[in-house]
Image (cartoon, rainbow, N blue to C red; front, side, top):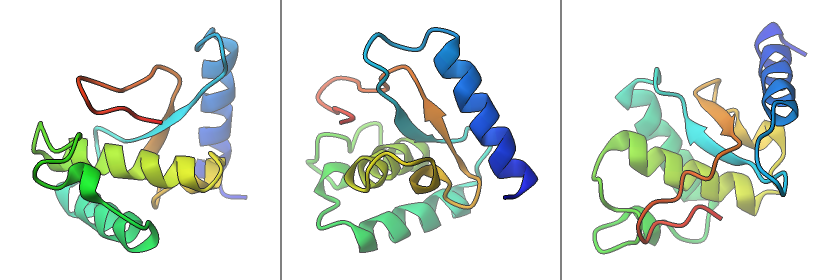
Length: 111
């Protein structure tokens, strides 16, 4: 186990123990420090692994705001949820983090 993965696990445990939400739900979102290039690679990877990326395409529920950060967060979370919400499904080469507050907005529902 690498130092960064241990740090992430400790961070998540601390967040969950600090209150989080009533049902223990978690979401996977892009780190604010991730570069646009890394976010684009994450989008491409997740879209290749998922049956559909319509949610972040024009007309999709999560298309707006039309930014790499929002698109990456939505599709990375979709990948994370589809694959069992395991910590390792929200690594994306250390460019993602686990959120304990629902990042859904408007018609864009993070499941």
